[in-house]
Image 1 (cartoon, rainbow, N blue to C red):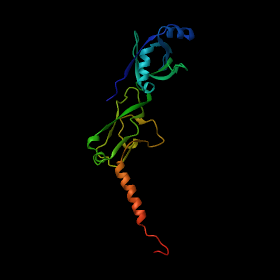
Image 2: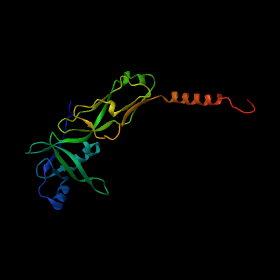
Image 3: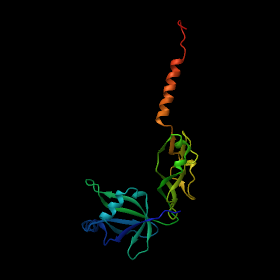
Image 4: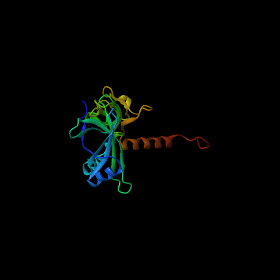
Length: 214
């Protein structure tokens, strides 16, 4: 199932240049520009508090948005830059790029783990360690998945789950292609690891020495 694309509300900004941008900030907005997609760049503004709330939720730069401007058709966009005040670290300008549904985009997708309650490794006392709770994928803008699924039904203690072992949604590929990166693993419990270390020490003590006393 494709992920629901979040709305991003904006309005047309009158004028261009630094003067118009300063006026937008005085009006409580963040000035910005929308470009790409075979159309002319357009100056916009987004309410400051509304945008700040979205930025603070995290993942804004890698989230596809449905840009809504009154009187215009909705268009899908992705953020390609947020300029911030060097002292206050607050947004002062935003760049958005239009995307067609057939455009490919690299975006972070959440990882969903299923069957953790029946995972053999976990039931034996193993510990599930999640290395990545989201994975960057190369996907079609019109078919972004809600999540990728990792099935733990047959995972044992000591098993490592890498991206190559996960079935990705049709048309999606990992954005990182130069290595088979780890998503999660099931490790032995600390107590068991400590026992193993102790056994090694005993074994070493039991090794007979050679020499005059032998």
